[in-house]
Length: 348
Image 1: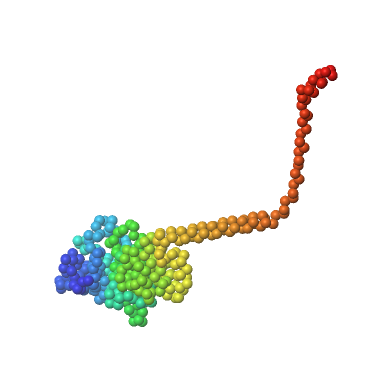
Image 2: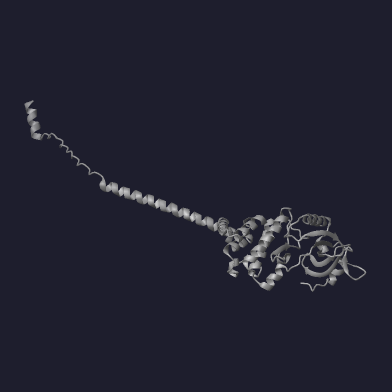
């Protein structure tokens, strides 16, 4: 965090000094204090000298926008965002560039603490308050995603919580990562970043690479919210929510008490542990059950066949006795002896 003063190392290249000693950009926007800094640049609270109204100014590090292609992409995205109007987006009024090539954005200055400072001061947020915050973030992201723009740097410090006179909290998403370029970053990547933000808001700490369930760190969180967050953090992008609008729909269902619908969706998508291993386990269990049923049916058929065979054996009619056929011995004529042969000779 900054002490509020303009960093000396950045002062010469990011501002112009008017004759009065004030730090002024383009002779119109006075820089009052630095309220934040990150990898992409510095954020200041300022004043529009033409109207006297407070503004926010983000000065992007020039080394992040090198080359004509990068500068044109930045200008295109800024123009797209500046044409959007949504209560959950910090409005962008315009942009410009310093002589050394450092781009800057002129934005709405949203009074209020960042979600980071709230987590530090309060620890784990109550899930009902957090639910309202999450829903508003989804609304803002859905608006920019429909225009083909990603935030690319969504984290608790990018969310400002502004308390209105009515007592309600307005959530404003600020500090878009315009200078970041990653062709693999898509909506499901943004959903993962939002899941990390929600996890930290409810547990007080960012999620690990393989995070424990939210309820393991905060037992007051309803199971339905835990399932939603863990689905956002799935290591498989295709198992995450496909859009911020779909995520908001489930969060709205929890808020309005439609818990059964979330349980049903969680069961269908296996949200508590949505990864390849869990899907394989489900398929394996189904195969085991099918094999068990098949084995039981086969055993039943064998037992039925055995019973039928025994019944036939014991109830079959007795066999009729068969007659024994005797064969008369063959009569063999006795052979003549020598005496008989002599008598026969004499008689001849």
